[in-house]
Image (tube, rainbow, N blue to C red; front, side):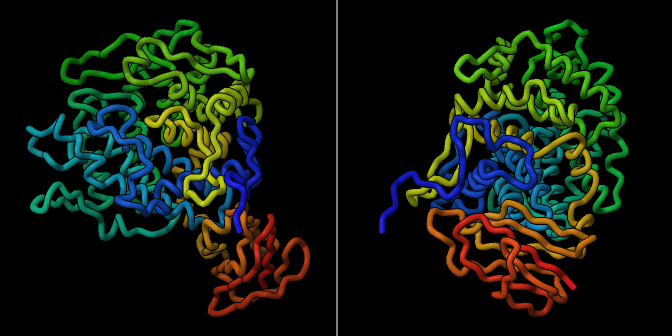
Length: 497
């Protein structure tokens, strides 16, 4: 039986901001973005697994693998807080992202900058925080959500060739970054040789906070050194309509590369400061400067707005949409209820770039992204997705309180047959002792006999589906298996004795 090509199981409105809102659980559009992340990572099994990734052989610009991987991982991690009793898909995306990050094709570029350095070819021992900071943040996020410490205990290897294998653990990676902060008078770590970018130095500190919370270490103790130096030296003189922060500092020469900044650089730096900084006012003062930037333009076709890239942005490879995509994540962390520009930004991205696609080639659309261009679509989509699911200081909490410790011992939906079944909501209520989850089919055909496995359940009082008693379940050794046909959105409630 053939189905019409382009049909979809998800109710996704294309070219429309519906579904970008912060909701109870994940919207269908957000599920479709999550599915795109899955298609790019653990579901991507054809060939070498990189067939859907934009490839820049040099890996020196903002289109490099490391940035797309990192921002995707961060957005996937934030999404799990909408389904706290279901982590399976996020764990797989994060684990796959980490494995990709340590693949030599991602860090091979070090030969351009550090081939004569005594640490070569170790990609994280010295400088290169534009890579090591993201490796550390993804590692910490994976451990926090999964509770699995394999990378901290057994570690991993950076394999340059058959004879050069460099073993690392989480602690060794954190120590490599920490030692450089101790020794550098600025408290910063260079991205490129001698060059400290403000945007890169958020990520090691985010990793430090979360790693410390899990392992009892004290790497975040040096936050204040970098914060104080950066705020004193990196902030531009305030001129209405201009940028907030300088871009990069030449350490050995003791000078900044430019006396001006860009809105895209401001957005990146400010979006990832709240998890680690002790001075949130500095972040939100920066948001106000971004809000007043003279480069905002109206997008007539949508009624939305975007930040026009200036000459400096273009010099760094940042275009209109790349810089604008950071803005919502800054704004939603500084205003919890009123969002003066974020809805307008989403109107622009939806109208101009919103794309619902069939990437698994089964004739049905399942993946959503913002198709700016191949080199930027992933990190643009990821930054926007992060802003869809975060409000207020949730990122700050996320990088300071290990997820698995918060939910230790709680019943959860351990497994659903993804991608045939998608999980829209999942939460455990301690007061009522109920595990609730909402699922829907991930393809146009119903998911027949889908088995959903719940863990941490010793005895069941009742199971209901759509408010009605449901009997097709089995409980054995603390594991509850629910078997059901999933044709439309269905809500299950497990009442626990």
